[in-house]
Amino acid sequence: MEKILSLAMKSARAAEVFHLSSEETQVRFESNRLKQVHTNQATSVALRVIKDGRLGYATATGEDRPEELVRNALETAAFGMKAEFTFPEATSFPSVEIADDAVMQVPMPDMVSLGEEMIAAVTDFKDGIICDASITRGTMTMKIMNSSGGMAEYCKTFFGIDIEGTVIEGTDMLFVGESESSCHPVKNTKWVIDTVRRQLERASRKASVPTKIMPVIFTSNSIISLIMPLLAATSGKTVLEGASPLGDKLGKTVLDTGFSLYDNPLLAFRPGSRPCDDEGVPSQVTPLIENGIVKNFYYDLQTAARARTKSTGNGARGRGSLPSPSISQPVIAPGKTNFDDMLADIKEGLIIEQLMGADQGNLLGGDFSGNVLLGYKVENGKIVGRVKDTMVSGNVYHLLKEIAGIGSEPAWVSGFLYAPPLYCSGLSVSSKA
Image (cartoon, rainbow, N blue to C red; front, side):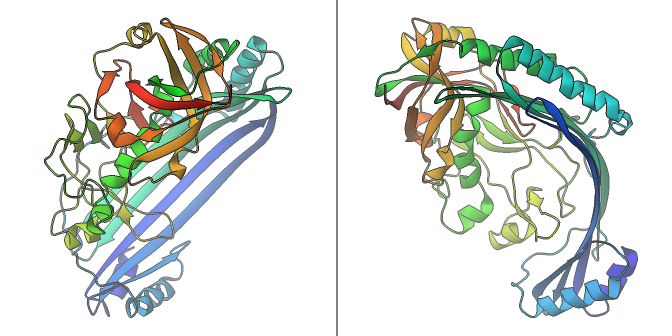
């Protein structure tokens, strides 16, 4: 990295070298049987240069040809965008625990056993169910160095288990599933198994809902459909482009006063946590919406410079792409209402466990319309069965303006989002029944 930086600085005004290496092992099951065991190792190096005020960029899969990497980056600078930022200087980073050596020491047979255990528990509970599952362990190391003296390095481990089940009965298809992830080894499958069994139990009976506006409970798993428009709208890039409906709402109340959304990459042993972003800017907890008020937008270096503000430590990049603003680990603050109390309050309504296609609407405007992939009818405070051929539609900003209840039992969703159930008093529901 030092050699690449030194070579780049012979012709560029400023430069940055980004190095990423990873190793991942995955055990995959398909149709209730072990399908594949494979390990991938990857190393990539990215170079950003600022020459004549413009940004050049190049990537390589190793460090063995530094001259070529530098030459390619310098050549692209002639056509690059105007660089409006400076690389960060040397600084300190928050301490966040994200590595556990025990992850890479989990034997392959143990990973296979975890998958077999989940599949056996689910297939024993429900005849005819076809399960796919995966168990993944891995580690990644990020290093960054720039010409301003900025340096950062960290290592992260990750371990995840997930299972998806499908039951086909004639033209009826039922989908269930759950996952769990951590920077620690996940050796206990009980929570995932219990969740899938509960889904199967609730779906064992069929029910129908009328076409009308009715109260709806979004479980933690389905909250992502409501949050994606908010995450898109609070991106500094979207705001800068004038496309965000929240762009002129900073400091104003736009949602229910009980609703708060944060980006928190400092939680211990969570896969989305890190001490700094992919540009070497220290990580921080960023309140996006707090008590219904728009508090902040999230930025990378370039977008922040254009907006005349500071990066929030949200610069993220893939192996072959330039950094851009990206949420790291969204967290919705839990409320005080437990799930059973939400349920008891509904005379006739719907619980949504999985929603499909909701992101196909006007995402930035908050409009959504999706098929209920897994949902349950509620009558007089009790779940009476699974609904079929049912759609819901609405607007996220209208829906979250007045929330009937925010759950007190948050859960991690796909290792990405930490969210409680949300109880909404009225949502448009349509059914073929």
